[in-house]
Amino acid sequence: MNIDSRIFVTGHKGLVGSAVVRELAKQGYANILTVNKTECDLLNKLDVDTHFHFARPEYVINCAGRVGGINANNTHGADFISENLTIQSNIIEASHDFGVKKLLFLGSSCVYPKLCPQPIKEEYLLTSELEETNIGYSVAKIAGLIMCRLYRKQYGDNFISAMPTNLYGPNDNFNLESGHVLPALLRKFHEAKVNNIPEVELWGTGSPKREFLFIDDLVEALIFLMNNYNEDQHINIGTGNDVTIKELARIIKDIVGYEGLIKWNPAYPDGTPRKLLDVTKINNMGWTAKTSLQEGIEKTYKWFIENYKDE
Image 1 (cartoon, rainbow, N blue to C red):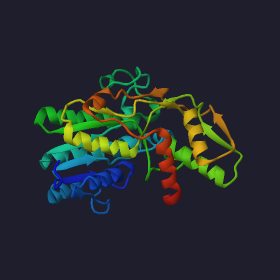
Image 2 (tube, helix red, strand yellow):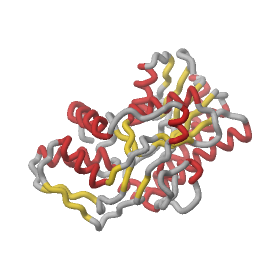
Image 3 (cartoon, one colour):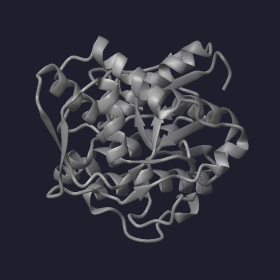
Image 4 (cartoon, rainbow, N blue to C red):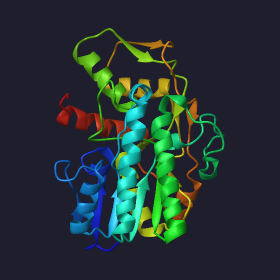
């Protein structure tokens, strides 16, 4: 990408999209294209085609989609598969039809099998069954990365896919019902502290292990890939380190300054036992994550205190 390239960032109000826009501007890119839902509904193919016709993006970074934590995925799976399939298909097809030079499709580590060998290599995709609690979202993302691969094979389109691990950071979704585990825990401990609640109940056993990537590290990786990666196979993005959910809860509890007790409720599902990505491929290309989990959560909590408004 050149500094004056027309770069369309979808989902620019979300965690990833907003951070991509910030980082592109920070690096000096001058023609960053975004669109609001009232101007272009990404679920509507005519809207998407019309926008591409007039905006003529040269590059597309697709960060749009419906996302959520284990509860949201488990209870609204039909919405997750339907909306994500529709949005990504509209964007990928329009990118092909209107001659986009390069598209980056953003997937998720949940595309990998539930009981996958660890750390998870790119080639482990579709080697065994998926985690049932988020199967709708996972299948949609798998369809997107295969769609990019097939458009590359049939038409020669330079469509690439990146699979990030669990993300967090400023502008995250802190909703207790639909948010992912880290921002939801951060908000839960904060509210317990503010309201002097003596005990916080958390779902599951706390034994699953998860890897967490600070959003600023992710977007640096995405721009790095847009400028340096042109291969058929999707590529993992992560830190190469993981923690148990119990360890994560203790870290967040200390950062927030909550002094009460934690109670684990094993009646609720844990989800996949472990998800640690093998990031050898992107590390060997010259990119590595910079932000420690402690530092990233501290920055996220600072943003939460200064900016978050309940919805």
